[in-house]
Amino acid sequence: EIVVTQSPGTLSLSPGERATLSCRASQSCEYLAWYQQKPGQPPRLLIYDGSYRAAGIPDRFSGSGSGADFTLTINRLEPEDFAVYYCQHYATQVWTFGQGTRVEI
Amino acid sequence: EVQVVESGGGLVEPGRSLRLSCTASGFTFGDHPMAWFRQAPGKGLEWVSYIRTKGYSETTEYAASVRGRFTMSRDDSKSVAYLQMNSLEIEDTAIYYCSKSLRIVGDAFDIWGQGTVVTVSS
Image (cartoon, rainbow over all chains, first blue to last red; front, side):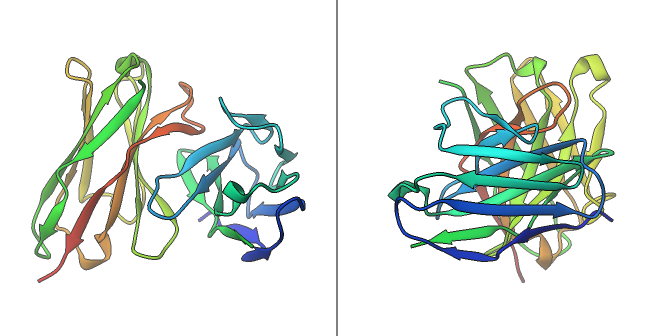
């Protein structure tokens, strides 16, 4: 069973600051994606292939990493960026999410 | 507008069945793998099932928690994906989201519906 661990669980920051979110898997990923979810809304794809921004995603969002260790960075937090972020690991026909990181004011 | 819309959720007793539908529009449905995900109240996201395109024989994958109880299928002529859920358990209570794969390899999912609520309770 693949285990995906996100850290920290909660990140308390102010608008304009930088957020750094971590995602670590128990085995290497074939693909790694990041999603944003706000209360009462479905997830929104931010990053795929570890570092490629999805359509319409502002360039303050960036992804990096390889293997089993990945990072999502949000530069200059905007008020609308306060949400829960999930990483999604894909390998051998199984898609596994981390438990999420809440970015709060 | 590219979108998917889920339907078919509701309140059902443990052990009973339910079929969810996912109706797509705004894109060539048959060109994309599709998936179902779920989110239990106050919890994180969980992948449920995945179906490939006709070119990949519409083969399916399932999470261990639902394998043998849930069946995913698709009807490209109607642009609809289905999730047949049998032997439902209380732990299946969740919002069920349908999603479109970004690419043929099914690595990420770029279009999500608003979800349909499934409540399993006696």
